[in-house]
Length: 140
Image 1 (cartoon, one colour):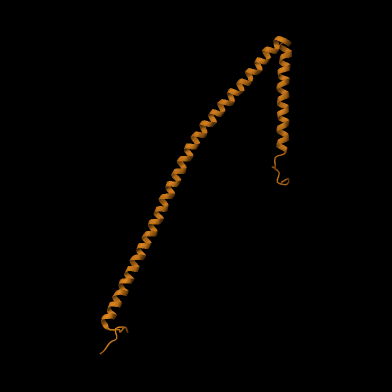
Image 2 (image 1 turned 60 degrees about the vertical axis):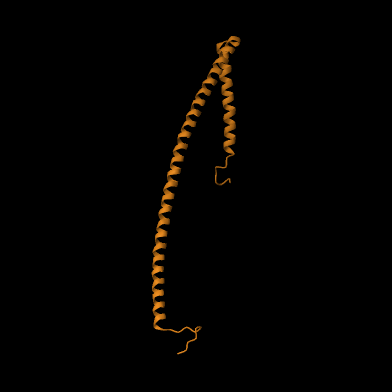
């Protein structure tokens, strides 16, 4: 029988080749599916490792920052104590100097009155500024 090479003809050989190709293709697809599944599993594992590394990084960073913050607060506390001591020394010095001119009782009154005046002025400034703060929900 004469066959045209351009027209496909189903014969047993060609059918068995196509069946084999289809089976091979399905096997490759199953293999690819397993490979895709394993790739997804590897991706999930990589994300877990990355998340653990990020948590550990921020945990370490936080501990370093906490240690630095503790040092800063300690230095701030020492500075406040030394500043208060300096103010006390200034007050005592003013008492000694003024007691030479006005006597001990008048010098104490002048220094105490000055300190009370400074305290009341700064307190009134603080109260005025505190009233201006937008803390009340109705005023905002």
